[in-house]
Image (cartoon, rainbow, N blue to C red; front, side, top):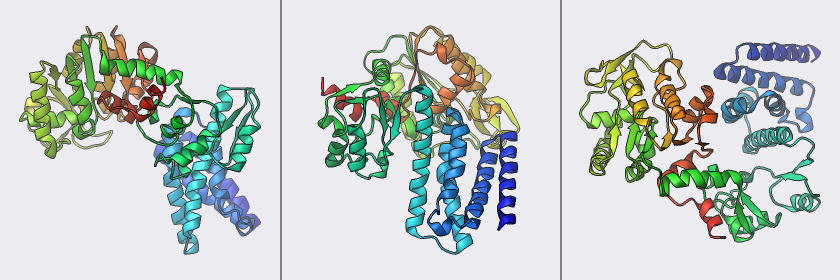
Length: 440
């Protein structure tokens, strides 16, 4: 047993060293998974499993990673890894022991969530509020949580456990919402990113408490709301991303408001195909060609200057090191696929943004995560930042481009809501916002 434990400990130290030397997403995922197995061997050898500690091996690597990670690593690495690692661990136990109970698998999933949200939230709050006493409740409702809430003193914070461990949260169950509301005297919604969901903690609690918008939500309503209801002109929107189907509502609604609409990313392929261009192996939504034609017709009817790429970066494969060349859309290599807009298109888009008074940007111009195909997105980011317009940027890759280039301070507003931003731009009523507005 001693040899087994020492070997595992030495192995973990070596693996952690390698992980920080070769710091990539996939590599860290593999190393952390191996570390998880090694930790399992340690506590199994020490007899902890027999004492009812079957989840010890999940706790340590997550605690370690979360405590050493900054926000970006947490968002891009640890959170996505959680479900993969828990699944991997469950498979490992099946292989090792021959079986795993449903209760144990469910426990693994729940424990993973507890570790991630508990430790990361604790760490982040401690960083933001040094010296403030912060407690963590074992649940978001229940006698113990109510007792902890009742014992709070002025200036102290009680962090509740993950609401989604209760199915009633997403069902907007009024009884559950009332229990949540009983913990407080006032409800403040500062989560624009969840305000498009009619959940108990978003909409339900407003039936039992006086409610108000936080400063962040107020800013989102001010800027994104203005783009929808009372935009400045010339108003230019930039919409990118892989599929037209993901942003049909947004494009259709913006065509009633903008002066110019710039299209990039994979969705541009579908619009170009609808115009009769041969797109080779590029991503094209064949079942959305008629829709694309309808949107093009709507743009023409509304006298919107809808710009599509005139040149594209065509690649031999969907890979960061793929052979690639920039070609005019009229003469594309049919054996290649489009992964970015070309330099000519980037220049035209920058010129279209120059005189704008309001700009809304959501979605990348190409496969931004690959360095060879990020130039179009970066060119647009620089043009948006250079403009004197009121600029609103949303969407993970668009925001990542702005942050990567150090341009965040030159953007009027960076939206924190993914789905919420899109639904707001579609003109939809957000339940979380409507619930607060009804309290006015």
